[in-house]
Amino acid sequence: MSNDFIHRFEPGNRLEAPPLLLLHGTGGDENDLLPLGKTISPGSALLSPRGKVLEHGMPRFFRRLAEGVFDEDDVRRRADELADFVESARARYGIAAPVALGYSNGANIAAAMLLLRSDVLAGAILLRAMVPLSQPPQADLRDKPVLIVSGKLDPIIPATNSAQLAALLTKAGANVQHPVLPTGHQLSQADLTIGQEWIKAVRFLQADKAAAV
Ligand code: MLT
Image 1: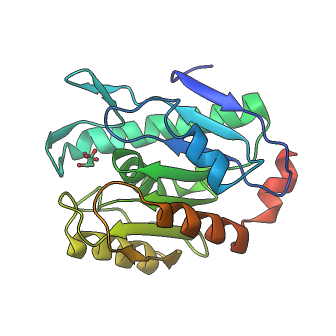
Image 2 (image 1 turned 90 degrees about the vertical axis):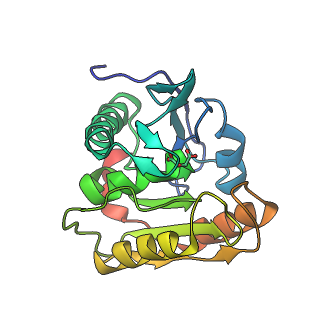
């Protein structure tokens, strides 16, 4: 496969469960979010790449200049590269367009993909995400379901930033839900419950799914 990432793929066993693209946080790898994916959407196919950028040996999905300050050229390039990988992985494994499930740095690259290459994703769950690009392109996210779960006490992501991300995606037409939990940057049980409920309730584009099964 051209443009490959080290990754794990686990086939799904429930046709109505959308495939998930699992995107780990800084210092994570392709194994990290498999249990989270299985909990949030049992029976989904799971595609889980490892970020190619190393920060002091810790894998990430794009370069940053400081905490919360991104190398935006790299964000654009890496989002494109990851979108190409998703496209070739879909053909290789025969899966529909996945719903991204990203945490922290993984949620930020998922947000960048929504803005730059929205066609490769059926929707997204963004856990502790922030605005990835200061001058985002005009994206068409009409009816794309997006769940952003933020922590009110998150020391990395100011509340105004995650609210700005929700507003940006909504303005592009996405169907955004944005619960804010009384927690910090770490995930909590409530993230899992909200993610499970959301994925059960949301309808993803059927045409795409039908084409891939
Ligand atoms: C990022 O760099 O994407 C954010 O600061 C979140 C993180 O990875 O710590």
